[in-house]
Amino acid sequence: MKLFSILLAIVLIVIAPFFGQIDLHFEDMLNNASSSHMLFWQLRVPRVAIAFFSGAILSLAGLVFQSLFRNPLTTPFTLGVASGATLGTAIAIVFFAGTVFWQYLFSFGGALLTVFVLFLISRSLKTTQTNSLLLVGVALSFFYSAALMVLFFLSDFSQSYSIVRFTMGSLNIIGFGLVYPVAGVSLLLLATIHGYRKEVKLLLASLDFAFLKGIEVGKITMLLLLLTSLAIAVCVSVVGPIGFVGLIVPHIIKTLYQKSSDQLIFPTFFYGGVFLVLCDLIARNLGASSDIPIGVITSLLGGPFFIYLILHRNRGR
Image 1: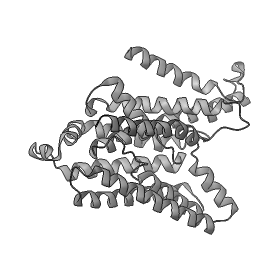
Image 2 (image 1 turned 60 degrees about the vertical axis):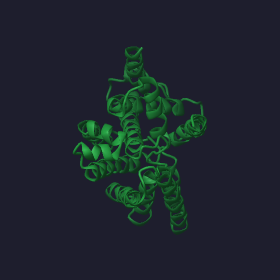
Image 3 (image 1 turned 30 degrees about the horizontal axis):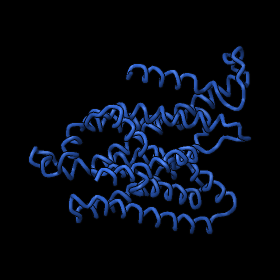
Image 4 (image 1 turned 180 degrees about the horizontal axis):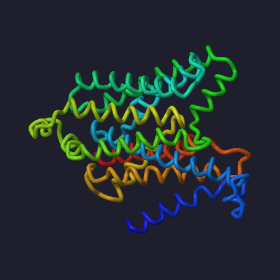
């Protein structure tokens, strides 16, 4: 069954670039001067690639946050990290002409600031008060949303339009220039989390137990949170905030594999990417006059799923 699902996922990734609103002429795809060649190699293939690596980052980040905070409802979005990155990117659009360099810098700064605040607050909370930390993240998200509204008033029409389009999430890119940084940080995140897989397992069991095993709890936790925030910041600065991926995929993988978190790292990374590729495929083929923003599709799926998780947790108590 697992082998079949892997093969099915690979087939989905391979065929995804061939579907869209504009039909491809296969006989022209190898002709550099044809529109089909440009559409396939400069738009469709980079779009599938950016979708895969962005989904992988968001899913793996969700697994990390749920493991470190020992709360199945925590994600980069529910804790406000992605919202901080979004606000930082909006600041770059309004005050720094929206150049890619400033978007990366301010996006990471917003995410880093949020993680720093959460880390300081978590040190004053008991290990059982993870719900309180979740509420702090929600409060930070509301604060960032209010600050974003202020930026709307300070921006002109074109800047406001750019911010609105950005907050909906978009995988529309041209060429592979923006794929490389997202792919790079996703692989770095995967390698680092896999390298600390035993520590993550011990942290998930108990902070005290991990400390007795010789784990530098504070150092490892901060390292993973900072690296995860960096990956989220780069991802959000390129594709915008795409919600609920970090909530849906880890829970589905946990249900299917029934293993500890240290053994779910690669499946979460891979199927997170496949999930966003599938969502993008749906967004591009609903028959609308233009592509539906990818954030809309994931939110439509994630909202009911989030409610289901809350109800399921309450029934289990």
